[in-house]
Amino acid sequence: MENMTALITGAGSGIGFGVAQSLAEKGANIIITDINDEAVLSAQQKLAEKGLTVKGIKLDVTNEQDIENLLVALADTSVDILVNNAGIQYVSRLEDFPMNVWQKIVDVLLTGPARTCKAFMPQMRENGFGRIINIGSIHGLVASPFKSAYVAAKHGLIGFSKVIALETSDTDITINTICPAYVKTPLVEKQIKDQAQQHGISEEEVINKIMLEPMPKKSFIDIEEISATVCFLASKEARNMTGQALVLDGGWTVK
Picture (cartoon, rainbow, N blue to C red):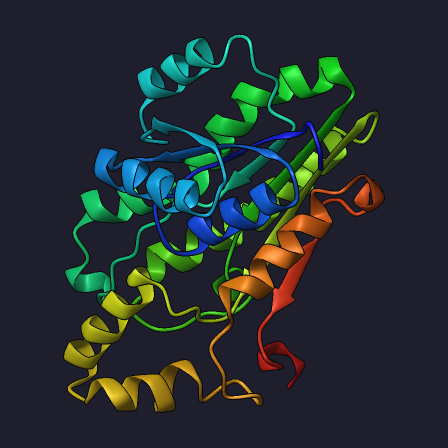
């Protein structure tokens, strides 16, 4: 991936940060974006301590002006690899789900990737190369209670990616969605607390009886597993893998 440039959304921490680090270690030029300025600066500092140089830009994927500002800031840069990772979560029964929060989740998880794809695909098409990788979820394939907005958006992301795969099939642009089961990130740590409250059980019971129960391997997915999958999908060798949902679920969907 030498001389390639990768832009990762929601890369201030968690999966996005891990993906940024792995791509940087493979030789890619990295652009970290996140809605949180402090998270961007912290991520840059952590990678700098590892001898990796990255560029950081604040980005709210739901904000059209932020997208336009991003394109201006990167006017002299070709983005070869786009990783749509930005995400939020809210756990609640639909009857109690604030609809503005419901809409926000869909805007971040589904419309956000559409915005970034629309922004960078013309450049990719002009260059004759592009790799778009969405960080989806096992909940793009199965459902869990209290996550109506998240599940709807992640299902939609897979369908969206299939359409874009068809629209870019005439050039060396691919789009794929990685669908991991639970990963121990700050987002999931918050879910554990929220679900414990919703179900009236302990956090340990949430982990063992809700999150890991459907998985034959009974294990959280490591960020390194996701990062390695991203690196393959970003490679030139993955040119004929497009429109796919790659499932890292410890056997969840095998049954």
